[in-house]
Image (cartoon, rainbow, N blue to C red):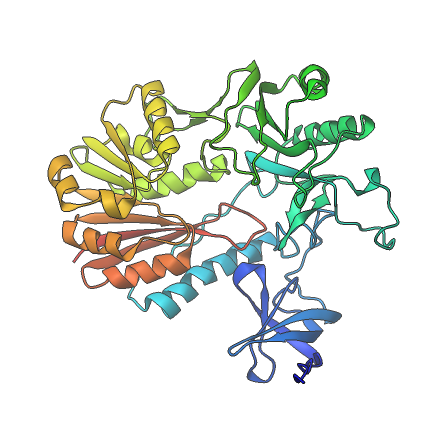
Length: 478
């Protein structure tokens, strides 16, 4: 007979002070020397907690009772706060959010980087802390998260349908969203219109486990001019969607200048490799970005249904301007733009340097980069698609020239060690490192510390009410 595993009883801790804001949007308490990560706490709260998970170096807990509320708290504006998984810091006053993001950069540099660096510049916060995103993607599900307290199984099929965001760690359940505060009007009205139409017609919603149901996804993109792109993703061809819903959407929302239909019968939600049909307007939006120096035309970028583009264009200008100012270009330099994406940074710099060489893994992004260069009449950018570690070789450098400076903007995982080694071989005079993850950035900076000195550190907040922070670092060859 096998011995049954003894289930540990929860541990309760009373009058615990929340002392910090941690990773993944958690708050941190340290009762009796224990590190406990707790959701929905704010530094300064005094709470009773239940510890439900014990790891070697930390515990996880949940708040059971508030004894005192922190002065850093504020009332969340979203009715879905705490459930949908987004905007995890919406209960913290924004002035404190950005201070803890700045602290996150410092903590990572001290704990992981262990390098010398100058005083971190004050974080550039957002003027627009709501309705700042230019892209949202909603999922249809026949199993929405029920919030009315009724027992499971007591709702009919129609009452279980929802359009919204997947719950954290629950791939088959969505929060049925009434109002999201991330994208400007009429984004919410468009989603509610589609939901009302499909519910009234009793059109099936996708069942991710059975891989059946018509409605799969709704993607809404917009630009700073208030123009909208709507992408309807369905599981199979539908005359009702094509001949009824689409004309009604067009009539109800003149802001929609691009309306696309995608049939996705695959077992995943990836649409990058699927054909799309443009039912209204052009299959793209045009976004503009101000030139970093006066006297030059604004840059224009074409955004298609699957194009990568910074989701907060208002702060993207500040982010790129920061990188530009730190680079201190003179006009005759050869610049490398690593992880160039759709070439936004490359083209932002292009008018003020001799030549830009951009490298990006995603071939579709490189195609967009070339199109955007044509739109802006830019002829001094050359783009290459491929794995950075395989493209950025000695032969590549010999063919394209040794860069005077490099801008690198890698994904959250940071740069591969082989890429860092190649940068150390290239020995460009300056490197501007743009990062969406200060932890991996600090790791990479530590690897480069023997050859490069950190000259400036500038955090930028791109995503209010989340724990995420961008950080720009200027490195100079020692």
